[in-house]
Image (cartoon, rainbow, N blue to C red):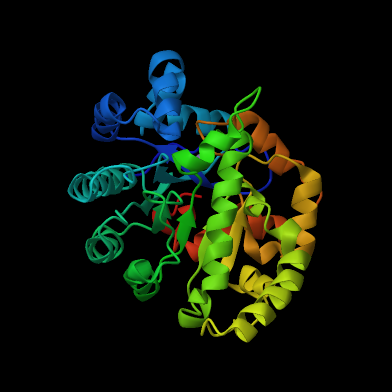
Length: 357
Ligand code: MN
């Protein structure tokens, strides 16, 4: 189905890679949980959204009308959609499995309705690693979705634990990159982020939580086990690029201590920052900062950076202006604005899909 062309405001095709959607069933589930889970920082955020920020609620649920209008008005070619955080991860395993499968079905339908405008990252339930591996296979190979999304911890557990490794096995087998999207830290940690302005959520807690998750994966040796595994981090890499010297220096110190204390953990084959370089891509989501973009381009290179807006949580207009005025050479910009996303998420170009561009 050919769709009307939109007006591009900048010179680059824009594929935005961290764009949220929700299902009614997911929101119903959050409302149910809100009655029983009192001390959950993610559900607290959603309570505020449901009561006071209806624009976010409505824009998450919309996969056709206003979303496409906003994309068209700002010259955004494509949203790579993913179920909004924390996805299905605070439900019991059976509920989570059912909600993820249903969300993936709805996502695949939306991509089918708008094949040149949407791609999709599939959800899965880490609560059931074997079931998650099956759903990953179904979502990528049957539904044709383009990658995977997970929202950091699940009930306070992180994916470096050995029981979760079937998830990465499936991801590698399906050649699917895993986007680790933020959520709030577990409640016990979030307590320490209460401040004059609460420092959980995206002001600080998200980055702390997701950066921790990425560091746990790096030091676990998972990338020695799965050298082809690709992890995507939003928000310019959740501060990891900035930390690369110290993660290497301190890993050398720490692994020396562990080796002599005889824990039996084999040391990593490479320096931590080498995994960051080879096994991670970062996106610009919610970080409309040219200085940080230039820094990340310098230390990671344009092959490792993808554009993202973080719709509907952050504004499209500002994010588009940010990328269209970014002070990088055109060859780097082509990679960042669309080529890397098309490659890592296996997205056909609009021209290939419709022949009309
Ligand atoms: Mn986001």
